[in-house]
Image (cartoon, rainbow, N blue to C red; front, side):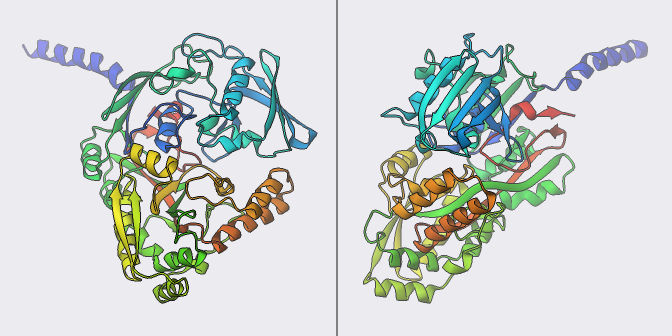
Length: 489
């Protein structure tokens, strides 16, 4: 009997060992469910986290360090000082439905993006396109209205991923891309399963199946991670508990930076917020550090303008809008504003919900009452982002180098000052690094001087993962969770 037991245990070990060695799946925790799986028709960062570089690909892509890398375009030529861009496409690329990806799809995608009625959230990135010409099946010539040194950068955004005319209509729920993963199943409110694309044109990923598990509640996220029901939470929604993971050998804690400028957004088109003195008063009423400590448990870098502090062109303008409640009261008096009550619309992220309560108390101290509305993500997008039906809101803008949104008068906070637009127009045709820095700093200063929004902090990236998971990006140069880079040791 003893010998039979030994043989059974040995046989079990032989069976179990390959299973342990071939760990080819991963469960990823995310706090927000994407409202759609089409990043070209919605602004939510959650769409890009699930789909960008996984389901869909662009001509170029972001690397973990923010560099611009080849993707569907293996190379490109730049002519006429950046006015003409010729992209050379990779061979053998197919969409998930088996159809070929070629230059006609590039032409379709870019013309759709710039067409009248386009719902692309970053349509301004492509407004400079004059023509898209198919040179041959694997060559596309894009002529711009004016030189743009940033065009390869623009093509790396999630809003610029390539799609086919045959499948684009259903991409919101049945996405068809060229990426290393296909949609397996989307169980609304619970999870999104991705499976490896066996016909992928590029390198075969180590992970065969990825499940994005939707866990909005911070306590539930902590419990799921501690129980090891989730393998990684790239952006962990309960930063106050990170110390528990740092002392546990089962886990790794990843702390880095993001491109997320977290702001108290102000509706510049709505009285009395159309008065710069009122906007300035609100800025001086807000104590940034108190929000960072109270809502983010110390994680975050104070900012005084809409620009990432880790960028070489950043200007520290925090002193200009320093916490000064007495100055805030004086400015409100100068503006002739009394008994002010404003609506504060808060989307689901923790920084908004927790930060909103703190800001409401700070504003009350200078005589401004707030009516808080906690909105679900789809509600926020419809009411605030699209409908501009708000006074105040809190949101983190996580796209890279997105100060250009201030050039759009139709954007939800409604700025678009002509002098600011002129700076951005000059930046687009400037290649000299010193001059570009000067222009970027002028842009930062202008929106700070106009107190367009209240600039709170740069969102930190704090993630938790099982110790054996490798390939995680330490920073977030764009809202991307690159499954193809992951593997188990």
